[in-house]
Image (tube, rainbow, N blue to C red; front, side):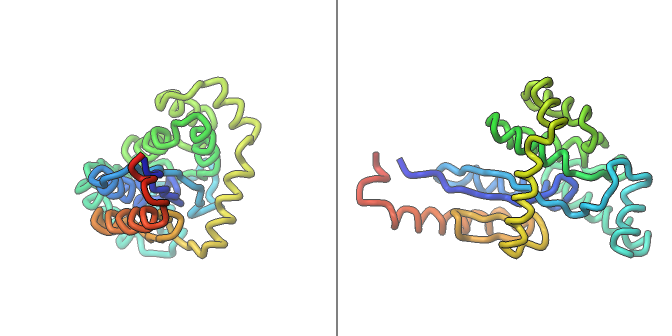
Length: 224
C-alpha cells in the first residue's frame, strides 16, 4: 500500500479563513483516491492579544488593523456569508477574542493522543460559532473533554506548559518557510498552498503529490 500524503497545516484558532479552509480541504480530501495524513501547526496572528480582551471583534479589528468600524462590520458580514456557504455558522457578535497560545498547546497535546483533528474542529466551532472562550485553561479542558481527551491529563500539561516549546518551534518553522499568513498548507512535503483555496486547488495539490510519490516508489511497492 502506498504511503499516505502528508499535509502540514499552519493555522490559528482565531483565524476565520482557517476554519473555512479546513472545510474546503476536507472536501478535496474526501474525494481524493488515497489516504491523507493531516498535522496542524501553530501560528499566532496576534500574539500581543491579552487573554481577556475587553471588547467586541469589531473593536479588536478596528484597533488592530486600523480600519474604520463600518468597514470592519461589513467585512465580518461578508466573512459570515462565506462561512455559511461551507456549512459554518459564524457569530462574530459572540466571539470572545483572546490569546490563542494555550489553545495551540492543547492541539499539540491532542496530537500525541491521536485526537488533533477532533480538537481542532472543536476549538474552531467553539470560537467562531458558539462564543466560547478558548484562552483560559479550564475552558480549554472542558473543550478537550468534549473532543475525547482526559480532563486531568489535559489540565496538567496546560498548567505545566508541556508543549510550549513545540508551539514556538512551529512558529519558528513558519518564519523560516516564509509563511506570513494563514492558513498555509504544505502538501506532500513539497507543494505550498496559501489561503483557504477552493477544493479544486487542494485536490490538484494532492494529485501532484501522489503522482510524485508513486513515481519515486520502487516498482510494485504501491500494490502491496
